[in-house]
View 1 (cartoon, rainbow, N blue to C red):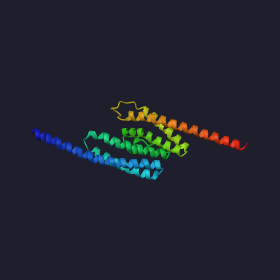
View 2 (cartoon, helix red, strand yellow):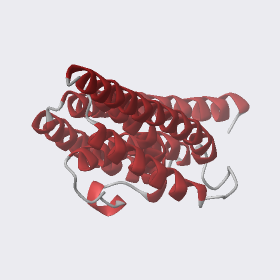
View 3 (cartoon, helix red, strand yellow):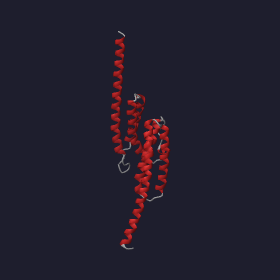
View 4 (cartoon, rainbow, N blue to C red):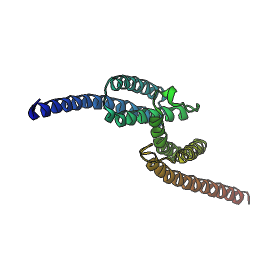
Length: 210
């Protein structure tokens, strides 16, 4: 085989792989669209809409898994893990909001790494829940979200493995730490505000009684 024939064969193989990746990227974009809608619906309190979007995302992910399993391309691992992370994040947030036990990887339909990636991003969504709850004077939900944030962060801390084994987790853990501290400060400020308002109300009541 001549050099020209050899390089043409290599080019054809790479071109075919690139076409496959493009198709899979389309699948991933559809998954992300559904998971983002699911997360947005959770924050709007539309849990049935979130469940429907999550169901569609899981079905798309199962199709993606099936297609990737038939391909000899190791480079696709990161692509599928990112999609799994998005689905896991949406599933975990929905379970929290429904006050259910957080599902495990098998129940969601993702691998261990995808699950950890979703767990890492869950902290940010829980902060959003807490902040929105504080704005709505729902201190109970804010506290529940904060407790879950702390628990999730503590779990992530235990995965102290090299980046080559669990890429992206350490960065998400560092981000989670900052989010937990900011939320703790927000809740502390809210508690102080409530105490001040209660004190003022009590003082006004006493003055009226004089």
